[in-house]
Image (cartoon, rainbow, N blue to C red; front, side, top):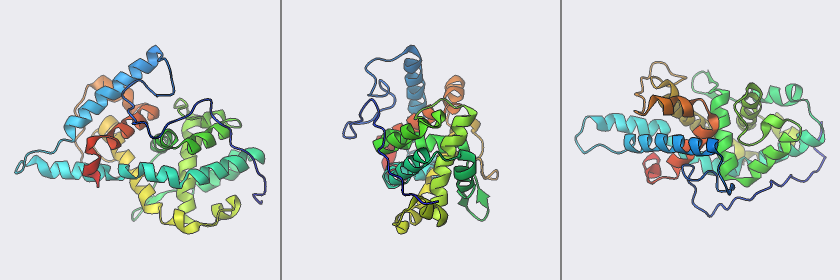
Length: 276
């Protein structure tokens, strides 16, 4: 199969000013002139979660025994700092995939799913972080990079659950999770390069460690929010949960779109420097 078809990317009915400072906790998102009651509730929940994390990420005084735990906490979330850079690097990949998949009417299960099975982290063993975590990643990318949002909108013309910020249905988690796994697969092999007619292979191969680091950090963020006891893929590591209202914990921890908002609040805050 060759990627000879060309198409134009569907433009969304809104624009994003990347020069404007982001805050998911304030009237969400800037694209909406008015907020629905559910959006107000979502924004307040994200704000409550962010305030809890803001306190939790404050560095203890010198000599405090909690400093070691604070360093461990920061290291586990350090991969979040890659989210902006990777949204730029993988935008052409997702645009190309969207154009070819929709123009050639690909069968998702037959063509895209096998690629996603090759996309994983490897740390002495195969690690699949899970579709919830992957959907959180691509939701954050779509907010940061309008090209990725356009690609998802184009894919949604054939697969509606690929639309940005689609609710966490089983199909939405599978489809959007597959897109991030395809990016991981791209970093590991040549098949995706050939099918998408991509040539600058070094760019994506060199991004494999950063993408794995981002997914690992999102997995830790999920554990701090929802499970609160141990990193999902390493049960030997005990991690204290971030103290917050249990209702906020359940509300955010069960919604990948709001997890993406929380992620962006963290990396765009004054605490981003501690991850470097």
